[in-house]
Image 1: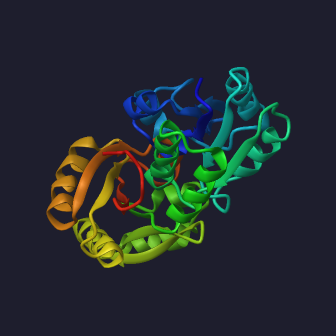
Image 2 (image 1 turned 90 degrees about the horizontal axis):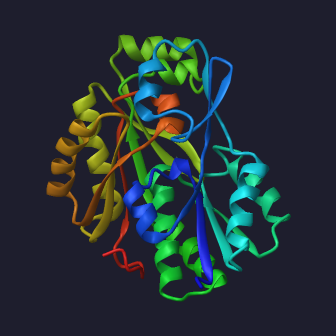
Length: 285
């Protein structure tokens, strides 16, 4: 019997084959589209989401409820396993709070971890936790190692248009209009658990170049686990990955779809980088 099981939410953007390989359970984030609630990847496919995306009159995300978490936790608890639950930044979502409420109703210990990150910044922590569990580490040890790893993980995302951030209320419409006129492309990063603009560029290719520079400045020449992120732009992500691999010291490179929960705010065509140093003790190789 597996002694520690890892749970995360769908904002982690972990490719399905890796979820299956590592035995990670996922609680889906909700999407509210035109008054109806859909669970990411369960009630609506990516293809249908993007087909309806631009025509939606109202579109926002909805955190999983405590009941959503409790359903998954009870399934794991039935096997007698302890749980480490690894989630999107608490400053960006109420997901951590929902997980904590459900943890108090679960028959086995549940350790909720705020990654202070999103997408594969969060996903890498969940994957590392699952790897440590496979190596036989206790839940307490895994939580301690995640807290150390959290500070070593970086995420940057370049946004091709502010149209959707304005629609979701993340930026004002006037700011979005001015940025469009000036052709400004923001680069978002996670700082202290909040998504903030860390830089800007006057074209999208320059934003991608600057994003790689930010990763170089952060990690220098350390060998890295890297994820190239995208929203419904796999071909562009594969091309961008070539630039990333030419400039960063990539030990492993994953191409990951950021998913609908993040696309709601930035739209199609976003590209990003998530990375952390290989020196962290995992078996992700």
